[in-house]
Length: 609
Ligand code: F6R
Image (cartoon, rainbow, N blue to C red; front, side):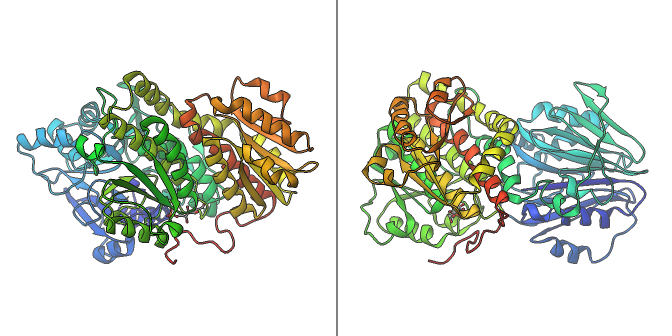
C-alpha cells in the first residue's frame, strides 16, 4: 500500500521525508522515492526495493532543500522498478507528483497528452498527473490541480510541487486518505498519521473533493472553489499504536480497512456506461467462455472458504458446475480437470505451497488458470494464465480478514464477467446486483460503526466457553466455516461450523445447556428451515445468537440475541455477515488475553507442504 509524505518548513527536507517514509514501512511497499526543490531545480531520487536502497543512493547528500515530497509505492500499474517509482515528473522536470490510488482513465489521458507531445517514461497511471499539471499550468499550481482533478476518474491522494512556486505544496484527495500536519513554522501532507507523528500531533483531515495548499506558515483548504475552515484534530497515540494506524492490533486495523479494500477491488473494473465488469489482466472471448464445462476452485484455509462462496454464486447465476477443493487434497487426488476446465486458484499471499502445486497440476492437465491474489509478482501470479488482483494492501495479521472480503468481491466480479460473456445474467438482475455491490463498502462501514459494543458484550460471554458452534445453510454455511476458523485460530476456542440441516445426523448430541451457538439466517430461500434448526438447538438449552437482516424482527422470538445486518442481495450477504463474526473472534481473543496478530503455531505465508 503506497505511502505519502510532503514537507515545507525550516528544516532540511530529505532527512524528515526519509524518516516519514520509514514510519510507513509497515504498510508494505516495493520502491521509494523523494523529490525536493533545491536551487530552483527538482532533485529526484528513486529506488526499487527498501528505503535503505534509496538511502544508499542519496548517500547522505541531504543538501539544503526545505521543501519536498516522498513516496513508498506498492506496485499496481507497472512492475516495481526505479522508473515506476514515485515521484513522477512532467516533461520539463519542473513539477513532481506523488500519488496513492488509481487513475482509471489514465490510458485515455495519456493518449491525449502524447498527441500533444508529452513524453512518458513509466508504465504507471500516476505519470499522467504531472503531465496534466504541466498542460494546465498558468502560474498557479493549485488552479492546475483543480483542472486536473476534473479530468481524472478514479481515486487519489495527490501531492505536487513545482519549481516555479517553491513556497507551496498542493494536494487533492478523492477516496484515498490524506492529512495535513500542522507544525510550528512548518507543515506536512501525509497519507497516514505515523508519517508525521514525531513532528506534530495536530492535524487536519482532508475530505473527498477537497484541495489544499500548504506553506511554511499557512494552510489553505478548498472545497468547490471556496476556502473552508477545518477543525484541528489532536492525535494522542503512542508510538506502537501509531504503526497500527491507532488500532490495538493489525487484525483490528485490517478489519476496519475493509470498506476501503472492497473499493480497491472494485475500482477500475466496472465500465461506466453499461455497468459491465472488465479486468486489466484478464480477458476471455465468448468462444473461450463457452468452452468452459466446469470451474474448479482450489485454495487453502480462509481462501478456500472464499472458494465455497464462489461455488454458490457461480452455480446459481451461471449454472456451470463448480468443484471446490482444498489445495492439499486436489493435488494428490488426480483431479478431473482438462482444457474445458477453468481453474480458479485463490491465495492472498500468492505463495502458498499447496495452492501453487495445485495450480501446476491443473495447468499440466490443460486447464486455464485464473489466480485471485493480493500480492503482485507472487509465484502464483507469475504462473497463472490470468490474474485478478484483490488490491487489499498488505495483510499483516496472521488471521486473514480484508483479504477474504476482497477475495469474495473478486469472485462476484468474475461471476458477473463470465455471466456477461455467456449471456447468462439478464439486464435487470445484473443492474440489481451492481447496485447492491456498490452499496457493500458503505454497509461494511455501518457494521463497523454500529455493532462493536454489542459484539464486545457477546465476546465477554463467549470468552468463558470451551466450545462454540456455528450454523448456517447455503451461503451462510460457507460463511460460518470462515467465522469458526477465525475464532479457532485467534482465541483457541474449539469452534465448529455445521450445515444447519446436518446437525441432527450426529452433532446435536453435543448440544447442552448454555452452549453458545452462532446462527446465520441471511438466505431467505431457506430462512424458515433455518428457524426450525435453531429451534432444535434451543430445545436442548443452547444460547443462540442469530444474525439476519434489519427488519427480520421475528427472529427475536426464536433466539436469545439478534445481530442485525444491513439489507443486501442474499448472494452478496457473505461480505456483510462475516464482518461481525471477525469482530466477535477478535474481541473474544482479546478477552482471553491471546496474541491476536500472531497466534500460536501459525504463520502468515505457508510456503511448505
Ligand atoms: C486464516 C488464514 C489462512 C490462509 C491460508 C491460505 O486466517 O489466513 O487460512 O487463508 O493459509 O493462505 P493464502 O491465501 O496466502 O494462500
